[in-house]
Amino acid sequence: MDVQPVSGMEAASRSGSGKTGFEYRIAGSLVLLLCTAAAAGFWLSPLQSRYFPVTATVSSPAVGASQSESALSGAAVSRAPLQALPGENANPPLRLMTFNIRHAKGLDGQIRLSAISSQIERGGADVVALQEVDRYQWRSGLQDQAAALARQLGMQYIFAPAMKQGLSQYGIALLSRYPLSRVRIDRLPGGLEPRVALAAQTVTARGEAVTIITTHLGVPRADRTQQMPELLRFVRSVQTPVVVMGDFNMKESDPLMRELSLLLHKVPLARPQATVLHGGEIDHLFAGFEDKASAWTEATAASDHRPVLATVFIH
Image 1 (cartoon, rainbow, N blue to C red):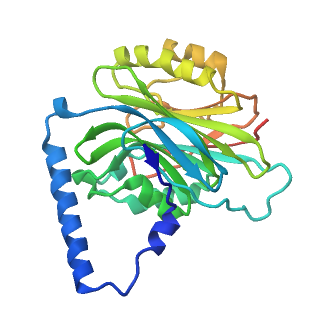
Image 2: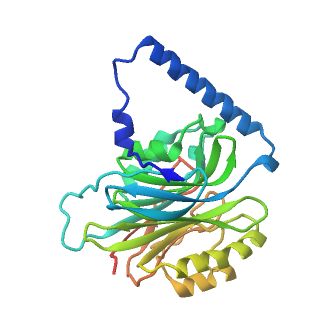
């Protein structure tokens, strides 16, 4: 499957004035068709869901060549030009964030994607890993949440669907202010709910290549027992410095986390605390290189999880 990348800014620039009444009627018909199809997908039995692995080719001026990428049907990829940070020095750090956004459902029960966008903007991260991201779901207003956040924040994105029902999708995403390439999406085993691991390579302002992996492991322990070995194989296959971050649905002290903790360096919280409401520290950030950095969380009412952030030097 050929995926033509479109940046959030480019998509926005294509809209404008000068449309005829006929064009508006066509657009209205397309919106109605989209809503009808999404509704059909929403009400389909889960037995009708399909998760087909495909090979996508993504060409990007930012990376200069087409690259084969293992992905799932429905994966969305954008490309945007590299942006420079003010006052960048010869060895700029990379700020990371992992954030389970719960499809932008805040603690008040309301869906506010703008609150998620504001939270990410305040964090100032260069690369953001998101979990529980909706795409064309009724519950979140039929938004393409990853694309909307990328557009609002001036970042590029990759969305990886773990579940599909009709046009409605649900999964994980990466946002980045640096170019993304070599995208890989692997399905993880499990019984309760499909899960995936998403990886992409980026090049920092210093010219260093680093692979970012994010995932959202299952709630049942039986699922995580199957998923961790697959995730470890995924991590071991990476040839660049690597960062792994996401919602693991377990504490680092869990025996299932032991091998990952031996393989990579956990970026510890400066002050140990829960990262999810009424829970423990289940959102983690690991690096494949030793770094004395510590992580921190930020208070939020935009989700039931707190974003976890860290600033690291790639080496």
